[in-house]
Length: 147
Image (cartoon, rainbow, N blue to C red; front, side):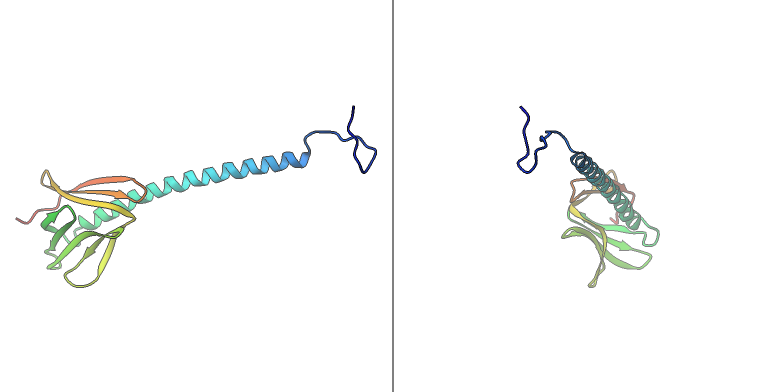
């Protein structure tokens, strides 16, 4: 027995319409595109954190300041620059690592930080950073300790 439409005498053919197929393909393409964009964004974010971490290291280790470590503890480092003949501090402040002078003001050296720690290890300054996205970075800097 075939079903009949109430408005005409033509039989109703159950099936899959072309427009439904196109909509399904369009939704699938959009979903794949969204997943690809999210994966690319996550990868770029991780790479950007590594690039920023290396920029921070190049600032701390630069010949522009030639820092010497006066005092170090897990939450901050007191530095002295014989080039500028000034004292500086490097510390975590809110979600960034900042470089401050003796007076007001600071330079954000690294952002999107969850936790930063400094330690003296094998005669070097070890910097351990955990970013907001959970990524971890560590580095040893050959900066002299002023004893």
